[in-house]
Image (cartoon, rainbow over all chains, first blue to last red; front, side, top):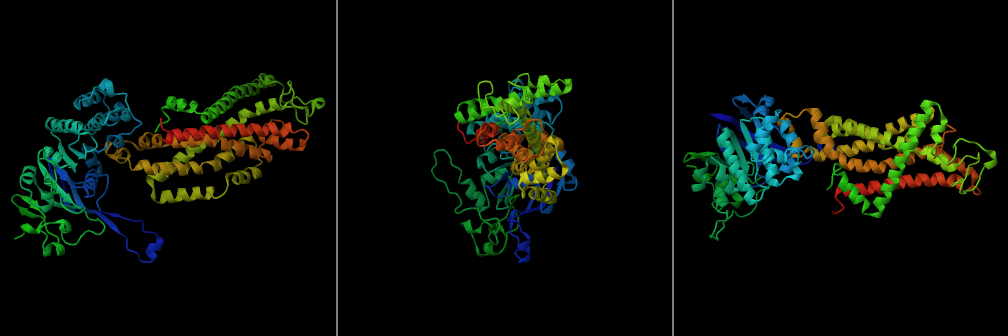
Length: 310
Length: 298
């Protein structure tokens, strides 16, 4: 069953403030198109991975789904209800964990206060800290900056779980951590998901992490979905040239052959015409420069590429 | 970066360096003396027994003695006497608590008013921000001293009138400081995600925003206590808010000008006292600011 459905979400930010003088001289405002026509479906109980480079709109998507920002255009349905009109309802059931726990936990509150303010039950606080593998007596009176990065992120996870969410949005939860700690947190998240049967939206730029944790995967490029489907399929046989490039740019043991996509991510103010990936694409054709590819159904998944259009 | 709650670290840092230590000693002496002498003055008012108010002073600061007029500094009268034969040291010591009271009340009220205006302005933004900031600009466009004079003179303000006048004009700097800090903290994940975690507005404004922006403002406030005393003394110097015969540092310096050049001690010592107090707060405030803002490595 679908827990969250977003249709054609667009989010434009004004890139510069338009003052009175600019308006009089007829200057047109410039927009950063952080998300441009992104549709997303999150099924109950799954881990949906969102993969993309920095600046592709991942965090914007997370914030919109968490009701922290409003989309410029688009429709959102949470558990069948219009999410834009029932913000309070969504907020009751959605939690979010951010990249850096030291920025996402109020430095003026102790660990106990941080969780207690979300779930006003002392026994539950203790249970939650046990659940994320922290000793209640050890951490309860500590402030976030007195904890290690991994411990602080565990606190952030406990706090996010404190309200019994149906959907947990994880925005790069392991990117700020050391490799070994990252692995511990990933295992913790997987265990928690099995135990509590929560739906995860897992946002990351790390391909290995996405592969490890996701059931289904969505690849974003410059504010657009380029490929979407079961994580296994995508990693076994990536269809979109960008996904192919991403996967072949992961270093592997004993293999010295990295083939990242050439060039850099495009500007979101003036994105390339047609397919946004065409300036970097090794298979670019004439049509790619002119017309934007639609999301095509190919081999049970969706790909936005003219190579697969018949 | 240190935070005000690590006051032990801050103290340790302060005593390590001569400027900070000097500031700390002057300010502590000033505040401790103000507390003791101030309490005695209050007791003397409530018991209607003036003796309490000068039991710790070398002489009665109100004892007029024409025979002793313009007595130069000696062991008995360390800072000499004024034109009426009153002991200048006793009068200075008697006047100090009033300066401390002005400074603390004005700065505290400015922090409260500035916090309310700055936090609402920064967090809510939009037209509310515009209105609050234009009012703030209007206040800041005139020097505080001129504004207080404009408020106090027509009202024939006494001591408390001057405190009120200073409080009315003193908050805009704090509103600006709060607003800038809030704009920074507002985008932190813990503030932006607060709606999801059902944090009440009161808790958000106090525990999430106020407590996270207050450190640099407290550092500035320390320095600012000296500025208030300086402005208050300037007002007293030109005769605003003074009720003779109650001694007042600025007024003493101004009266003493009539004794120049022979009776140099008459204006000199009250003036030096003001200088010392203001310098103490500047040294301490500067140093605290450095420690809190992380310009000092430790």
